[in-house]
Image 1 (cartoon, rainbow, N blue to C red):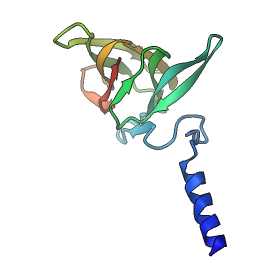
Image 2: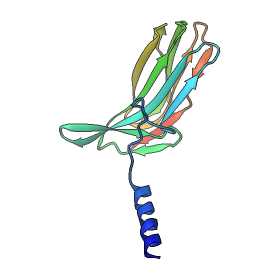
Image 3: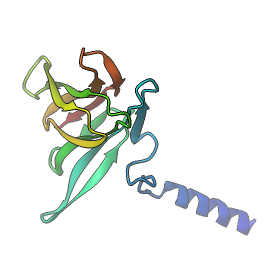
Image 4: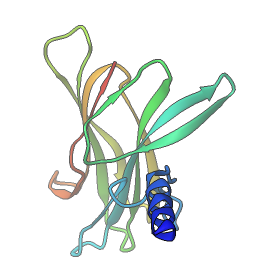
Length: 163
């Protein structure tokens, strides 16, 4: 009976411990990254979001955010929220990366929309770090589109509120 209690206590304590969620490629693991692939073009992308947290005056650390949750983020120890996207294009097909951000500042009533093409080209392997707004409510997506504007890959909406 003592061994069973000890085992149960060990499982509960070990299960509740915070674990760094990184996969073998050095990017966040399941629910913290999204891997998208377009079979007809061969283009694949990995998308994740992290918050830059101030640990002390001289150091910061990334906190990887679950893509399927809506967050309320503290403004006092947050240095930035960054959406990272890595695209692999083995066939060298021309593509564009477009960011779509809907942002409502704390003192406004309506969302403003920013749609901007971040990249046009056909690189084989490229990574982008897109800084997201640091106040109010934010909805952010990133799309990979072809020359005609048709979507090839679409990342779902990531939402957060900075308070």
